[in-house]
Length: 199
Image 1 (tube, one colour):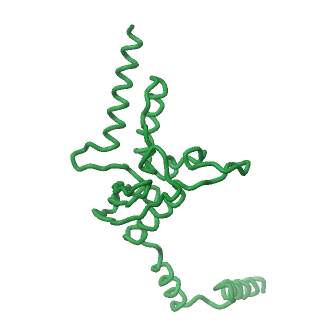
Image 2 (tube, one colour):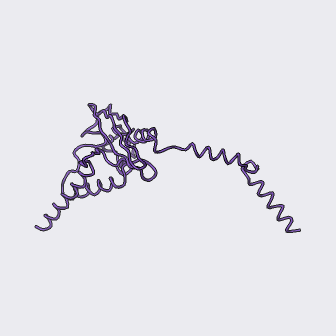
Image 3 (cartoon, rainbow, N blue to C red):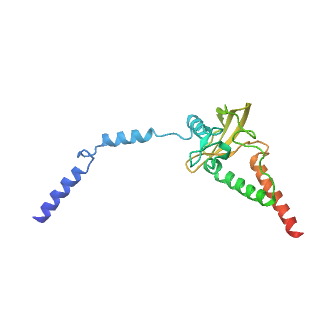
């Protein structure tokens, strides 16, 4: 009797747990779930990349507020846009170059690569004009930036951590890009440090 009761209880439980409505899940229900999954975001589409860059750049050059509610410019904003939006390899190079420049009394950048200038205008703006050379792991994006005057620039993207991150602010086919500048700066600072330690 206990076995029969247990069997009936199991059948009722299985039927009741078929779905939240108490119905058994059918093949038709599974097809609906699969169709919903198939409509997911394609992060390798041009439309997504444009939206991602718009999201990254939307606050650059704008006035924000600090933790105490005081109005501050982007340049004094404590939010680290580099660590949030740059690729891991680019950020690692930049961080090492910055630390060495600080140690050796050098200046890494005399301008803000995010706003394309040493300062920013109140009407600063950025627009994606072209997305191209897209692969599974890389893409190039042309930007039209207005900062006192109109400037065109290119950024390189890298797909990692399930999204697109800036891998270079001035990519170049001849290899003379920001990453080369950072590597050269690191090498020069290390040579300068070695000479200073040998004196």
